[in-house]
Image (cartoon, rainbow, N blue to C red):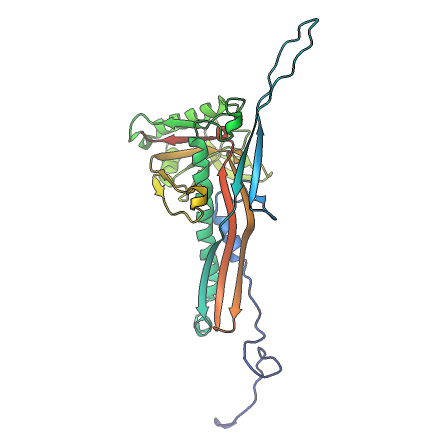
Length: 330
């Protein structure tokens, strides 16, 4: 065959062998975002996230404790009062990760950039997701009274706050461990069982390493509230799993959080520069989502670009404060 011969080729992406060569290309869904967030998030599946449809707001109600009385012969016992309270949470923000890739560069890249970007979307969302929940769990622990004002003192109370005596005490593993056990004691005094109520302890990697190197943590099999058995490390003599996470906003100040706005009084911002450790159970926060984590890759024919998207809309706020404890520097 001569080099200048003309021959016919099949273009399988065309409609009716005419027009754009990519007209029959379909959307691509990689699932990388979902897989990545499961690997990278410390809290995925740990806390119940309620489905919010048909409204933007969910409400939790609380009932105060009952009162006992003795019965006197010949006298009819009177009824006693139970106090009630409520908390509401509003979902009002859609969070999006988007990357736009020109068609030509997409085909000229030796690897599938869309998959790589999907993984990066997942990492960023996992960090954002965990940080958001940790922020509200810290705020729940910092509450000195029940978040349900109507039932405060009636079987409901604030979180547990433990403070180091010295600014550098958190660097001493023995003192750190002692203060962590004080956190658990404070929770137990409010009828919370750290080992039975699915409490987890969260620290930054440096504090985790200090506990680990000084043999204050032990390997154990922990069963989650969802019935899943995981191999983890727990506080010695306590069946409480310890999570080391860079997503935990200890020693930092958060401003301009994506979910903060004037309607919620910038509820997701805060000064956590003195926070060292957090212990909390799922009951410490309430959460809801209108749009769960969703991802997709789609083609825009008008601009000849690929779009790699991941989006979600959720909210989280303090709930039962007594199920949370925070350890802070003075």
